[in-house]
Image (cartoon, rainbow, N blue to C red; front, side, top):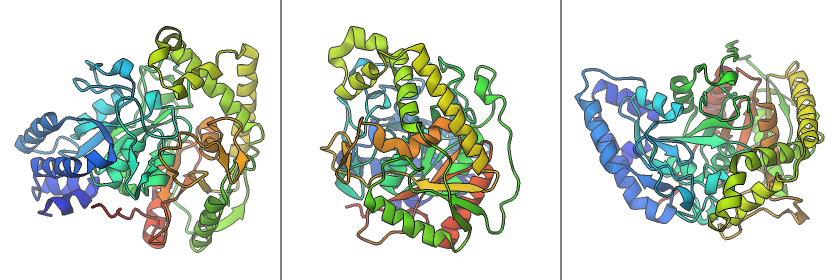
Length: 463
């Protein structure tokens, strides 16, 4: 545990334990990760901003403390650049916010700091989180550490790469339609998209909005569980955070798992189908599998409508006043919602409710639902959108995300894990889905298949 190389390979859980015992100083841990960033990030572009001086000051404060301040005492983390950090630029990947420095932390950041975490910097994202490739007019493209010609995935690609390359052991992300899950799949790391409201967003303008969620990316399940444990908990100003019930029933010896490659409606490439089938073959050794999907008919059109309405509501004024400064992807996303009617929106909510109830029916007979974490494997950064899969054209630029955004529609928690792969294979992950409130069982099962099946992160060969 003395070299920079070995420190950067340690998980957040192990680092927190070593710092608490005095085996490592927080300053040494921070310096090791800053050195890794200095060595790698010019090629990978995972970070928009690195707060080296602030991280060093925070580390020295940790090291001077008489006892650990919390479960993440002295551990460096990164925050996606859509989320406010007091005194540290939050650009949202947009030139419009190039100089925006918040005066207050978002609640998720405040809770990480309260747990002792050290904010090392802000990770890259497409402008406002809208885009299949993690790039914007300020930074990027964020390059996949397994093949730098390829995308890291949108929109938490910076966080996924920072974790995969050992620049931080743990990173925050956000997920609307798959934005922690797709980058996790592409970069061979694990992620958690918890039940919406589990991590509150008390400043969210639409208080009952359940499509978006905070999440985390790490190299293992233990770190995801640790991060969620320090950030979860209700807040009176977030109405969906107050009614979440924990379901801590123990994991069955052989869980019952429903398996679907495409939810019956999602476009999925042949390569992904083959990788998913191999993953299911491995899972059959530890669980009872049944090919079964909830009824997701109309889900793609439903998500398109709801997403477009939310984006137009949030960013329509920017399109009217600052259009020339926005990326084409953001413009398309805003314009997609401009002509929707109240009837369009409510019909989408009606169909969403039916899909939710179908998911609930499935979980009356299964403990988990397994699906691919991405519909395609990583593609070149020069290709801005997925316009076709195996020659079949996509109707809109977001349709390739259907395999993840269907789960966003219903608000069920999702753990993403990398699956075993050959030396020459690109990373690929699976979604493990559970009913709302069942994160503990997700983590227990994820930990079991990490250990028993080797569904775990493998380091990229960094130069």
